[in-house]
Length: 401
Image 1 (tube, helix red, strand yellow):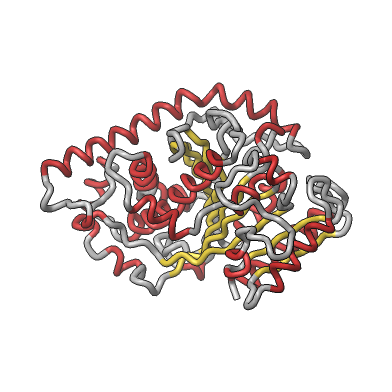
Image 2 (image 1 turned 120 degrees about the vertical axis):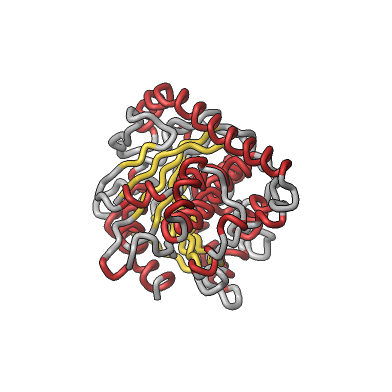
């Protein structure tokens, strides 16, 4: 397994976000290291003011389960958590954009990672690795055909979260809307910087490092940025998070400056060669993305409304029959909700009613798993094993079947 540590700006306001991408070990049957990654998952962490960060024990447990199943796993720190700058918002609008920022990066990274591993070699590798510029369609040549991304290759992407992270995941726009935001962006936009970052990090050097078990690629961050041993509760992570933030802010700032330089250089080059590199020619051929949702200890009313200050970014999840709760996508797309019957933030009565309503929708793909004796923080005896088993079974039956 290899781990990539990096930073990207949030599309909300450019606020630097600390991110992590973990690659699973490839089995002998998986083919070459350049074969496309077809399974990936994002797991968002709990509420930052209570110490939530991407080192949370529940996030770590779920991430490890996906890695065991051959998924590339992405985690990131919302603003105000870990080394991510800024503060937690009152409305969750900023956090929704933080999640969108990482999702956009993650999908493009997986796409470019395969391009650089399989399609770039020889003189092209020397040219692209030296400039780290996002390749135009002319420079990519027939890479999309080589990768099987003309429709035959599908990326299975799980958008997940735990506690507050699950609430933000529930409020996300559709994956197609996320991708459109990045594909239709202007050359100087934050979205363009994120796409440039994905190409910058998806290099042949990354593929070589991946072959070394346990290798850590410290991109944009100093070697001082290390994963801290997580505590058993969200509050226990606060001290570790504050210590880490001060050590890496300068490296995050320098990293983003380098990305802005790449974007500016690319834009200047475009202005000089308008006919060859028009905006339409820069459209990246992306894989077909099949979206799944994993919601662990989801927050419903009234806690969900309080966490978003009753914002109308979209309807907050509710358990009331007939309400316009914005939950249809969880019935339309394969979704698993896991919760304990001792959750202190949302009563089990509300969770059962909400899950039942989603299961009863015509053609529903929603499923839920209730864990007896489990609370919101999953620190009761033996409940972690059942949580892990529920995730494992869902992956096997729903995603990999």
